Each structure stands twice: as C-alpha cells, then as structure tokens.
Amino acid sequence: MTIAENIAAIYENIAKTCAEYECDTSRVHLIAVSKKQDERRIEAALQAGHRIFGENRVQEAYDHWAHRRGQYDDLELHLIGPLQTNKVKDAVALFDVIQSVDREKLARKLSEEMAAQGRDLPCFIQVNTGLEEQKSGVIPDAVPEFLDYCYHDCGLNVTGLMCIPPVDDPPALHFALLQKLARQNNLPELSMGMSADYEAAIPLGATYIRVGTGVFGERE
Image 1 (spheres, rainbow, N blue to C red):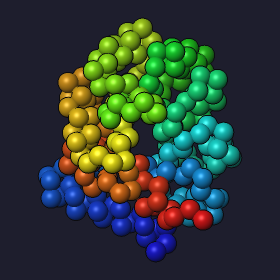
Image 2: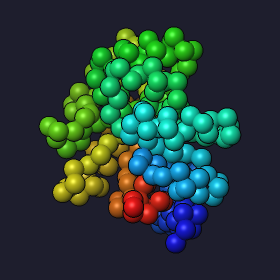
Image 3: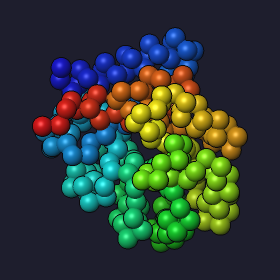
C-alpha cells in the first residue's frame, strides 16, 4: 500500500472505532510519526494532504521541517520525545505542541523561552503510567502537584496528558489510567495509542494517536 492509502486506512479505522464506541470522530487526530523517515516518505504524506506530524528529536525535526515551514501554513508539529533543557530554545521555535513535559526544570525553562519568543505552545505532561525506571514521565500520583506547578509557577498552557505504555503490559490498562487522570485534573486532551494499539486508545478518550509504521511502513 502507498502512504496515502495507509493514511486513508487509518482514518477509516478511526471512523469505524468511533462508530462502534460512540466516540466523536472529529476529536481524534492522527499524528504521523516522521522520525527516521526519509524525505521521499515525508513528502508522500504531505502530498496525501496530511499535516500533523510528530518528531522525537529536535535536530532531526529541524532537518525534516525547517525548510518546509514556509510551504505549508497549516503544518502542525508535535515534539513527542524527551526534551533536554539545552534544546528548549530550538524546540519552542520549531514545534507547535510539546508533548513531553516531565520535570520542573524543563517546565520552567519552557516558560522562560516561550516568554522570550512570544509563543504560548500547548503542552502535555508525560505520565510514566508503568512506573518504569528507564522511561521519562511523571508518576501518576504526582500529576496533580506537577500540573499545579506548571500552571501557577510557570504559566504553561497544559492541555493534556501523554503516555507510552510498557511493551509487555495490556495497553488499555494504561490508557484507562491516563483517561482517569485527565478527568480528575480537567484536561481535555489525551495523546496515547500507536500503530499496534491506537484502536484500543480511542474508546478510552484518545484525542491524538501517534502512528509511525502504520503510516510510513517499516523503515528501510
């Protein structure tokens, strides 16, 4: 299948899943994860009309997107990977949404840099739902306190939560936990679900699904 056909198939699956579980299709947005993809595949997704993309690394994102900003006014770039504080200036300049806010130092730095650049980017708090030592994210019990810090101490525009479930766990358990945390903290957006499990995330409130292989195919 072509990339255009892959994208069409994902939107068809979104529509079917939303119909089955009585979800609002317009609330579910597809982020095409373009990390480590070549120019040909990215261009194919753009030519298919897709405009929402996710990147894990700031420098790679610049290589993919800095020269395209002027060509696509409706481009929407999400940073979905860990963000080092020394990359915050570049991230704030390039991205439209920061999905991986996970510590006070980063929240403060983002706040300062957005003020310096005159930007007010929507942010997501990354939650380590599986309590994995090797993974970034705020532990679930710490979400309210960290959210309060982001709001009141930093003035960040936090709109949602993001998670990456452990590989060996049923993902729906983690999606349900993230949905519960979002409801408890009055956050409207949920970024969860990837190529293998986005159809499980949609009934549990996903508003952004992050799909790489399902869009672009296996990396060469």
